Amino acid sequence: MVTRSKLAQLGCPTLPAVPSSAGAAAIHASLPVVDGHNDLPWKIREEADGDLAAADPRGHLDGYHTDLDRLAAGGVGGQFWSVYVPGADPAPFATTLEQIDLVDRMVAIAPDRLGNAFTAADVRTVRASGRVASLRGAEGGHCIEGSLAKLAELHDRGVRYLTLTHTEANAWADSATDEPRHGGLSAFGRRIVAEMNRLGMIVDISHVAPATMRAAIEVSEHPVIASHSGAAAVAPHPRNVPDDVLELAAATGGVVMVPFYPPFVVPATAAKALGMAADRRHLLATVGDRDQVDRLNAEATADWDRGSVDDVADHIEHIVRVAGVDHVGLGSDFDGIDMTIPGLGDVAGYPALTEALLARGWEERGVRQVLGDNVLRVLEAVTGR
Image (cartoon, one colour):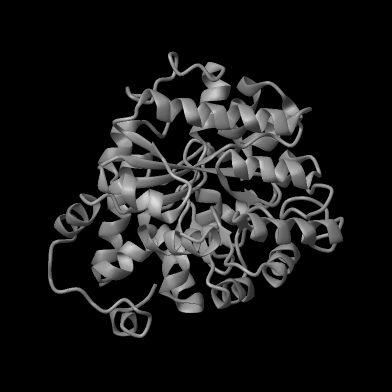
């Protein structure tokens, strides 16, 4: 934890005595949150075959972490929707396009609540209208099927970041949760990073091996993000970012966006997760039967510590200590996770984290950086506006 006496050195001078709940409410009233990763599109595909009449986010979605009313309650003004496709998909590029279509349809049915955004300027404009700016991020480099032309088509369709791998290594990049094949990035992987820079697409180093993180940062001329990864020094899970990479990412202006998933956030739970395949998507790909996957996960994780909002705050403050307050954000992973942190159970919960930071002595400016301003700076640097 960062002590009050050190907050000024970290860019977060202490706040005058104001009730944290009142301070949080005032901050969130202006829709400050820009979250780096939400899997609602894939959840709708899994649960409702992509049918927005059956899973309409304009109403309350039972069993989901996300709908439009709860986004408003959480003060969310910008959301990167993950257009994720499993590595086992036989036609991942076509399926990714279908997921982009699903996001497009979400925006189309709720134009009074959602607005398309492709640049930081777009996000600010949509937020100013009281709506949620809808951005798109592709998760897993397998989705481009080894084609620079397909990468460019994703950019043309509005995708503004690509996570270089998912849970498995692909033909050109190593994953954090698979056997290494390339020593990080292959020569073609380096070409992909360079092409992403040319297109104006953010390089996302979540899910990748540390060697891949370092190679991507070395190649990229623009800031990178980790869209949903914590600090490895706080919770020793391979999905988290080592301190040396935090420093490298900060040196190039990047942002590491802390998730709300207990195995990535809670130290004791991260240690337990190391010994098993806790990623639900991976289990779905290997087991196939969703009910069986749910039973396996429930049995294996029933006694795991879900942690608290303070565990997320600990990751944020560690990243601030190592990299600086300009280089941390939030990437919840809502609707892509099988357990949540008490107090952060859905997208309405962001004010609880703001309260925790204010209670630790953060000033409003620093809180706003974490909630969304930092990632908007990266988006502006990469897209040019």
